[in-house]
Amino acid sequence: MTTRPLPTGQRGRLLALGITVLAAMAFCGFVVLPLADFYAERADRLAERKALAERMERLVAQLPTLKARAELLDRAGPTGSLNGSSDAVAGAALQNIMQDIAASVGASLTSVEGLPTEPSGAGRRIGIKVALSASWPVLIRLIDATGHAATPVFIDDLQIRTGPLPTRGGPQPLEAGFNVYGFAVAPKDKTP
Image (tube, one colour):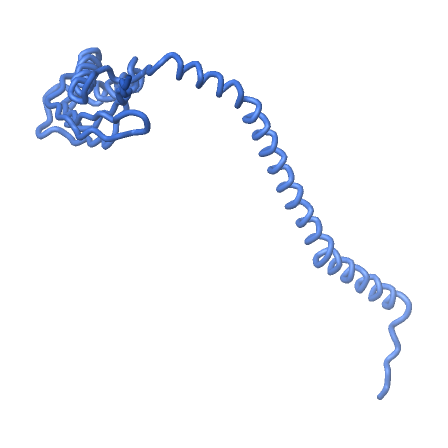
């Protein structure tokens, strides 16, 4: 077996330079870049964990204030709940709230139907099913006003359909139906 001598001179220097550049590129591609990506990923993960720890510290710092506020609310009694000694009275109060809201935005409820009462925490969830026919702007104002009611009430299962026939010169009425829920506090036992 005969061995060939390595090139010398200008050709040898160029070959050595090419091999050195190729080795440097391979080292960079297989060692340096993966290490840089690894460290960048770890730095990102560390920054995320640091931000999470800072957020948790802020939340923990708020805890005594929130506990004191909850105690004040507990001592003040139920607020924001439907008034009524029974579910039927609370349902009627919810119906009155929705009729007042509808009248304030220029809508008229076409039907109101009571829904079954469900226990919810220390109270009861009272609900009614509401139907109305109104234009889009009126419907949006009604939904917005419901969200800003003095007694907190919540809309669920919103269904909107176009009216049967278009009207001339005005917006087409929409048929809408949705459930409205409020909460009533369960009466406390009056045992001697």
